[in-house]
Image (cartoon, rainbow, N blue to C red):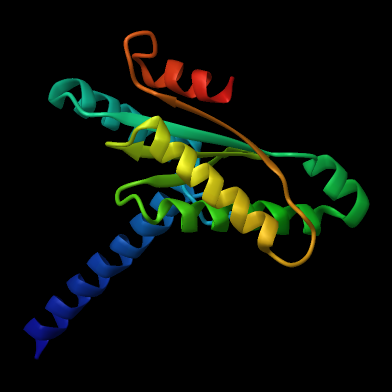
Length: 169
């Protein structure tokens, strides 16, 4: 019995540490408002994707979206409405990107979102953008508009930083 109590104590300690690690990991890699990946998670994923693409000759493309007139939404209806708008954009992006396995949707900062898509072309990214805009325009309530840019790794855009900059431009 004492042996089993000792083993149970060790297991409880290990489970507690695992739960603490999961919580810290979530804080480090998850946007608290939307539940999406945060900038750190997106940048790390993009770095890994770019390395894999260069080693294996694959493709990587990104979609960057800004919520239009978020300040106007906040000013007219309050910050809770702005937060709802950000969550709706995140949900629309996740739904649109679901057709591309392995895509990662995250919030870069403020009103900016990003979708990292391994093995995708610019046409694939445009399709995700169009599906997102369609979902946002057909949802009841306030009309949320987004501006999107896309870029893919290539000869003149050959680093993750340049890829994000190109899509944002």
